[in-house]
Length: 91
Image 1 (tube, rainbow, N blue to C red):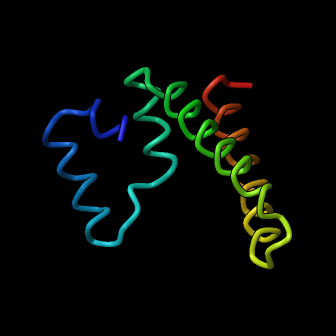
Image 2 (cartoon, rainbow, N blue to C red):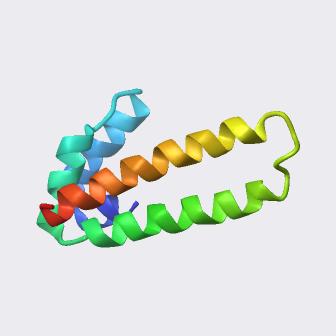
């Protein structure tokens, strides 16, 4: 959403059309555009906050069968966010 808010209307239309058509805009293209717009850090923080909130809520239900799998997915997503953060900082 932050990316869509930051790009010109014509570019926003391209991104929205790709999503509606079941296509991905592309992680590399998204990351590059977010860096150009100066919103990459905000996007990374927002994703990380959502993942942290989800993990916190899931832990209460850890004894339910699907929750361990969801927590594994959470860990995978945290690794991806860390890689995105690393790429954004050039580390």
